[in-house]
Image 1 (cartoon, rainbow, N blue to C red):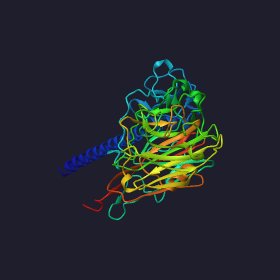
Image 2 (cartoon, rainbow, N blue to C red):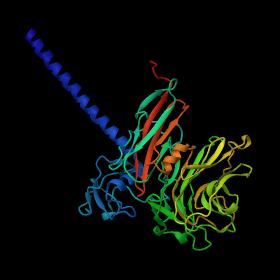
Image 3 (cartoon, helix red, strand yellow):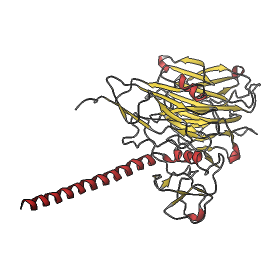
Image 4 (tube, one colour):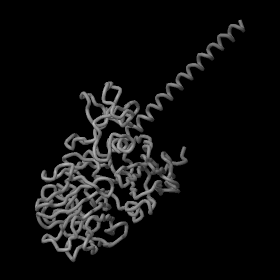
Length: 476
């Protein structure tokens, strides 16, 4: 009888052990599936396009290949689209529906994969909130694509780490980029990069926004006379938009759905950045005075004097100067500028305008050129037209026929004031390593991602990182 009980107990023990092992295996499989699915879905269409451009033969820098066979397994990032590496260039035959994705053309009408040119008229994806907690359930950071040379370095906190609010409410961010040659580095902190027109992703109607808000901020040509890919030509980094005027017809790009509300009462900070290459030296003053740049402007009447809210650009007044400015709610014009004339034809100029509550600062080629101390009565008081949009090609204007005459590239808009060190890294990250301390942070989750872009226009990312500031550390 004893032997019988012991045998039965052993058999029950084996069954119990087998059940535990089965549950463990199932849990691991489900966890891995959830983990990698989240990582893939966090890529987003813009990052997918960059990944394809940098690690595959799908994109040669100016156009997409007709087709190419790729495996879509484990690369879904949402909405039935896939981000995958090209494994069989030119393999347009024997498409297996449901198993293969394609980059570029549409063989047989059964293509599955990322589209290089999403329609600007399509339904936009919801824009993530630029708050400290842009995503309540973040996905793990996607790994940088092969060929990426950018990474976070100490003392940047590790992804997923938690800091004690009472002892450390600062997040230092340091970025390292290996390799040679000119490149630019910038940080999208807490979704504060609200617009990024790299000019390397476009269709016949205009340029796509490469920021998190890209679906909404498509920038279209206002004038059909310049529609066509020929206007996208060599820029500072990859391609730029050429707006060289051949007549008195204004030629600009209008991001008609970009309602940034820069410098409003709830957040006085913003940064506007762009690379400008003039086609003329502007030795003679134009009859209008203001030559062109980039601005937050009125959608219905951006060509009229006084209809720009904030701007950065070049003016022929006072012998020629770069200028940044904003308008108060009562339409008063506030500006700061520095002389720079004549400009050198064909030379690239990097201009950055920053504003916080107390100062408006203008940089050229990484160097601080002028600072305006904002009086108390002007602080947190930037006008925003009800139909405000973002315009690439015009600044604070005074007449119907003048816009930037030349090429513009890498236009970016941030809902925060970048530091001097950040602007140096924007201008030349090879000589100036990116670093920034984000201080006095309130409890919450903070997400950030760094980008590196080289002269070919290929961008690489660190992947998304999450750091939590908690006031509950150590509590049971």
